[in-house]
Length: 479
Image 1 (tube, rainbow, N blue to C red):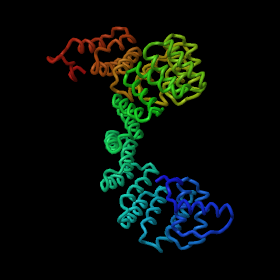
Image 2 (image 1 turned 180 degrees about the horizontal axis):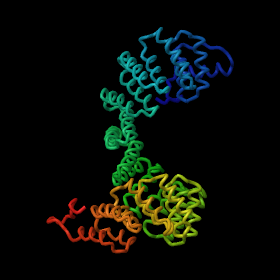
Image 3 (image 1 turned 90 degrees about the vertical axis):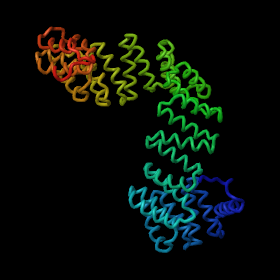
Image 4 (image 1 turned 135 degrees about the vertical axis):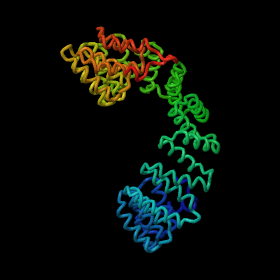
């Protein structure tokens, strides 16, 4: 629980004020254990480790045997990055006060931080066996300990138990929703965000989170609705305007998305991301002039904005201004050399300019970053390596075929090049794979291999002239 000075009662405020006066005057005042606990908590909740440790030092000088203060010291050691020292202290406390569940809980958090999950679970189970009236709070805190180390699956085990004990605890419900989102179980996440909203319908955080998950699920209408609720609750929630615009864009409501981005720019007029996305939207509407203006504006605001350079390069490429396009895409790559789209566009531009070596380098880098798109391999194979290097083209297509063995265009292309080198049997093998999957794309083969080879024509004739009664292609009898 986050606390500040205003959240303390008057008695605690008075203790804190006395403590600060003691430090200021360099005097020595007496405080009981309860007072010291709250003074230490005040600094811990502010993440002020220096003053928290100083308070612990004073507290233990007055109450050296206090278990609760020694536990604060153990927690302080964890916060300072000394988990092993904390563990040694906790082991000593365990021998003195074996019935205090906090000792075992803090040990569990230490083992979590050390990556020893199995031992952490044993410590947490021991703490739960001693907690009695504090079970729900302890379950929640254990869940948070596992969340700290990104073990959302284990965290949810404890949050679900806490939820069963008290099904209207908003903190537990929110953590369940957030954790299921982290685990990419978005449908379950939505269920818990909705449950939270039933309890607190005016929670802008819950509505915003729900909208975000709806975007992941590609339920863009529902996402827009959620972000509209956020805006209704807080008309100055800037992120909600932005996410609403993104949702509209992906929902193909392009003009509405431009309006939403402009609403966002009312709050942040020089936001390069929003300006870039407006440029993208105009490009989608084929308004290249406005798209170019917005890409240019984004670049003027941030000369290292790689996406805007890429957008500019793409427009120039589409308008056959290849030299200018190459300059822009090089800028994009300079500022982000890990985006395969940038390298792919570079490859296509260089190919148009007959910069074969540069194009090949760009194709190779594209595939290195992402080899999951067969289109990239096909375009790579179309590079003009020269007739004497046809085997290079065949090697590219063969490698692609290993990744996409049933891809129609790859099989037709590979069949055609194999036919050119007179490897007819292999050509027919790949030709049949293409015909099996889609006869209508036979022109891919014809466009590369225009000769009429008897064996090849016989295979094609069988596929196009012979049909089964249900009008399906011939099967393995003709393969």
